[in-house]
Image 1 (spheres, rainbow, N blue to C red):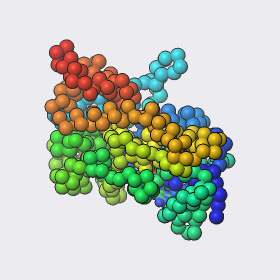
Image 2 (cartoon, helix red, strand yellow; image 1 turned 180 degrees about the horizontal axis):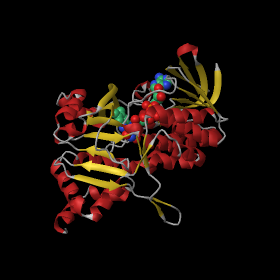
Image 3 (spheres, helix red, strand yellow; image 1 turned 30 degrees about the vertical axis):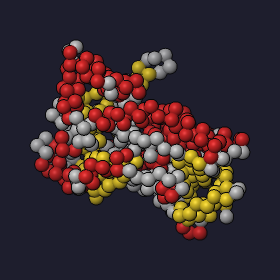
Image 4 (cartoon, rainbow, N blue to C red; image 1 turned 90 degrees about the vertical axis):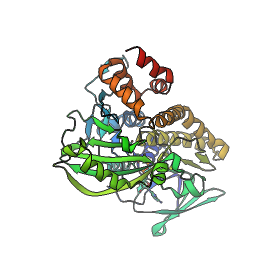
Length: 415
Ligand SMILES: Cc1cc2nc3c(=O)[nH]c(=O)nc-3n(C[C@H](O)[C@H](O)[C@H](O)COP(=O)(O)OP(=O)(O)OC[C@H]3O[C@@H](n4cnc5c(N)ncnc54)[C@H](O)[C@@H]3O)c2cc1C
């Protein structure tokens, strides 16, 4: 049996962020994953500014290496299409340096296949003195003992850790069986993803496209451009709606691509690459307890995906890093009690809580196509609304405005 301070289950973004932060703090850890990297993960492949921000905080050199990697496409904005087909292109807010000078040449977002991004992270972990990455081992059992967690899995794997960080994604058995957090259709999104080649009309500035098609509300159809003329194409819809309306997402995706009057033209010469795959998105639209005796949940295993944008990689990074910081404190104090680790929950709530709550309110507005039409229609001719939507992805205060009825009244009457 192996002994370690911290065992991290899952080497995706949440697990990688936790391990890299622990390495920075000089704490030994083992990261174990059932997959052998490079491995695919069903995702939209959109990396928001949050990812690079968190990475810079963990290690600016890794962030630099990501910024110069060839496997990603720089993305400078989002193109929204309302149910009434009003198209609104908004550039991401430019990066500001400490003198408040904007650097428009620095992209804030990226699009890159998870097979490449996650492999990049694993390679980074393998270079680190305090991280041991163990691939191809599926963790099957967790036993809480007096002196630590006994974690066991395939190939006779056994590790005893003082603390465990759960980062094994949306289908985590630990989340369900030990933390008691279950999938609730009202707080869960179903997503389908396909890779296409030769989709026409994609932006040269790597703008990601979100189409709020009437038939897909409260969800959306997306086209995210990738390097080499490829694109990540998919749909996401609240699981509650999927089961209530008996929606077959794969059929819906094909229907949009083949029959939507605007979209079908863009897919005339497009070619599907590989299979169409689906996966769940556990949303952070409800507050849960994310820690307990000798454990902390991170990323999708902690249900932290933004309910409005469907973005989960950034929050996986943030929570992974926060769990590692809390782990350092617990090790220093030799306190692994549920009460001691509850500080992790307070931190998650402090950093991500208000943002998640606001996004939940915005997600509910998704039900009203007329509101979207109005906002996007006005946005095409109103610079202020455009800037506001551009900031929406980064500034919580701006999102707050969008949830207030007075904001829409002002828009209507002050044009
Ligand atoms: C269709 C779809 C589109 C999405 N689009 C976007 C997007 O564009 N942008 C964005 O930011 N987010 C997006 N997301 C969300 C994003 O994919 C997740 O939030 C993100 O992957 C969470 O990272 P994680 O590290 O918590 O989990 P994961 O990335 O799922 O990693 C978990 C790891 O744990 C391993 N594992 C699982 N079980 C075990 C086990 N028993 N033993 C050992 N290892 C195990 C897995 O092999 C995996 O490597 C999307 C999700 C879906 C489904």
